[in-house]
Length: 360
Image 1 (tube, rainbow, N blue to C red):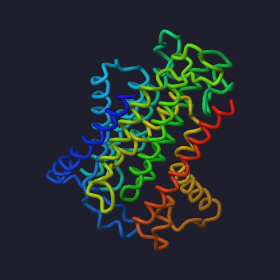
Image 2 (image 1 turned 90 degrees about the horizontal axis):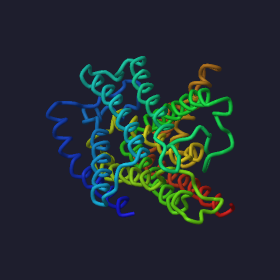
Image 3 (image 1 turned 135 degrees about the horizontal axis):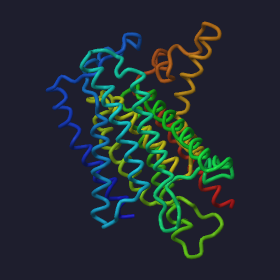
Image 4 (image 1 turned 180 degrees about the horizontal axis):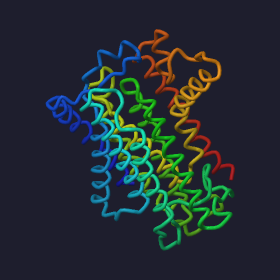
């Protein structure tokens, strides 16, 4: 538990104190955000605001995690390393995307083909590695079973180990792509994606600590409702570090934002959420805990699908937060209300998580 507190606290301090230094560096280099011309006109005033703030989030997360391990003398686990690899790898892809936007002064960054290839390399590497590294209990970080609150009986390896591995890689990369795009789409208003991420990853701190206290591996008399997660406390430490990093970054990212996280941050946070959901065996539950992200993605899907079928739009603009912006809502009002909705989804998800254990 000390590692959880230390990693979260130090990550917050590093992000809080390090972000203004990074802002000065970006201003000196003139690395500012390019605003799309078809977006809300109120966003034109944000042109030139420093971006790529995800570098701070990733750096603070890694530093907080390492500090927590050193302070408690805890060796790193395969699960934690895999989540941080996924987070950092997708962050690198996002960084390249941001850098191209800035250097070429356009709203389109990395070529779509290369972006998919980059995400695919990172995602496939993560998925394959997640089925390796068994511990002394013969448990690997991930399993080929589809999970809700824990592994279900739906095993992708039903048709054999090789087929199961291939299907798992496909399933894992679907989740990685879905979550990274979800956070990316949500990152459209000052502090919106950062605040929602803070709440969601905070929930995964609770999930990880609870799973550790009810682990099948560490309890001498583990009951039938114990959890098979391989490294639950280590995942909680990672989640705490990300939560702290988002907390510190939000001080500077809240309206009026002094810096944006960019694709560097949104892809990294989406990858981290996907990784935590897979390795904590809560793949479907994550869709409830991160329900606000899901709503934003659905609004985009509905808008595109309905327009292609009828030639008309359901929303004034997608994603959903831009619809409310064009409807006259203030930016701060939208962000705060979306935070509230995100909190309600998290409360529902954590409530279902706990109720399942009690009912068992």
